[in-house]
Image 1: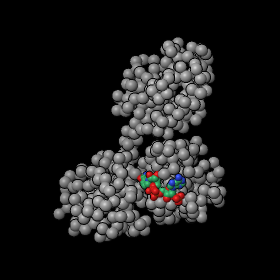
Image 2: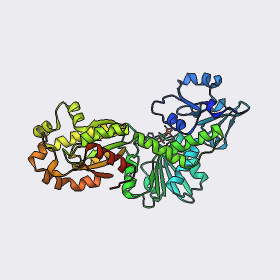
Image 3: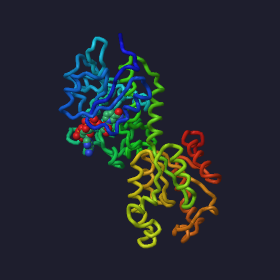
Image 4: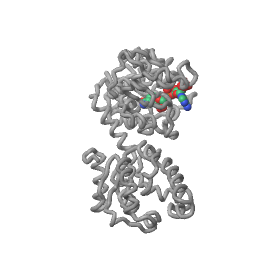
Length: 418
Ligand code: NAP
C-alpha cells in the first residue's frame, strides 16, 4: 500500500543549495517533509544507494549523474538527457522525470505566445537550454535557433534572426550578483511577441526591463520554478494540483523576496514610514543615506558641500545598485535619486517603487543642504515628473506614519494603484 503523504520523506539534492526556494514551494503545497541535502560529488552514489528518501528532486550539477541509478526514465527526461525529479514507485523501483520541461511548458502558456510555425531564439546552450528547445519543438515552433558564444549562431550574427517571435534567455547573464547585464538588446527584433528569462533573481533582469519598456509581453523564471515544483509534487503524491496553485506560490515567493523602494522629497517621512513598513511586511529596513555614510565615511550633506552634487550622485548610484540587488528590503532613498535616469532600472529590478507625497510646507529641511540652497518648491518643480515616472504607486503621507505604511501595503496588494 502507498505511504500516507504526511509520512513521506522527500527532498532536494544538489551541490550548493543556499538559495533554493524548493523547500518553500513544497512546504506550501504538500504534507510530506521536504529537506535540502547538499552533497559533494563523491557522496552522491552512497546517498542514492542508501535510499532514505521516498521521492526527491535533483539540481545542479547532478541532473545527469543520477540517471544510471534509476530503473526507468520518462520520455521527456530521456530526450532532454537530464532528470530533476525521482519518484519511488510502489514496487520500490525509481523513475526519473524532468519537471523543468513542464515548468517551461506552463511558462509559455502564461506568457501567452503561441510558437507554432514561428522562429524562437534560445540564448545559451546548457542544460536549461536543452529543456527549452525540447518544449519549443514539441509545441511546433517553426524554427528553434540556439545562440551560443561558440556556436554557428552567436552574438555576432544575431541580425540573421531579427525576425524571431520569441526570445528565451537560458544563460546566467543578468543573474544576481551581476544584475544589470543583458545577453542581447531587443530593439532590433521587429517581430517579437514575447521574452522569457529563466532567471528569477533579480525579479526583473535588464532584459525584462527592456522588454517592458518596449511593450513586449515578458516573464521571469519564477513561474517556471514554481510550476516544475508543483509538477514534482503531483508525481510524488499522485494528487493533481489546480493551475492557480502555480500563481499563488509564485506570488507568495515574490511578496516575500521583493523590495519596497521609497522615493520622495527629502524630509517627507521615508525613513520613519520605512521602518514601520519593514516591521509590517517582515522585511529588513535600510536607509540609503545612512548606508552612504557607513560606506564612504562621510555624510551625503558633507559630500555635496565638498565634492559637489554631480560627484555625490555617482557615489549614490553605486550605493543604490548594491542595495537594490538584494532581496526582501524596504529601502528609503535620498530625495534626489530620481535626478539620475539610470537609477530607475536599479530600483525597479527587484520590487516596487513607492512615491511618498507630503505637503511641501511640512517637509523637514534640517541638515539637508540641497533643500536649503534651492527652495524645496524649486526642487519639487524640477523633480515632480520624475517621481511620478519612477513610481509604481504613490501614497500621501499626511496622517500618521503608520497610516502611510498601511496605505503602502494596500497599494502593493493592488487596491490603490497610481
Ligand atoms: P548551464 O548549464 O551552466 O548553461 C548556461 C549556458 O549559458 C552556457 O551553456 C553558456 O552557453 C551560456 N553562458 C554562460 N555564461 C555566459 C556569458 N557570460 N555570456 C553568454 N552566455 C553565457 O546553466 P543552466 O542550468 O542551463 O541554467 C541557465 C540559466 O537558467 C541559469 O540562469 C539558471 O538559473 C536558469 N534556470 C532557471 C530555471 C527555472 O526554473 N527558472 C531552471 C533551470 C535553469 P554558450 O557557452 O553556448 O554561450
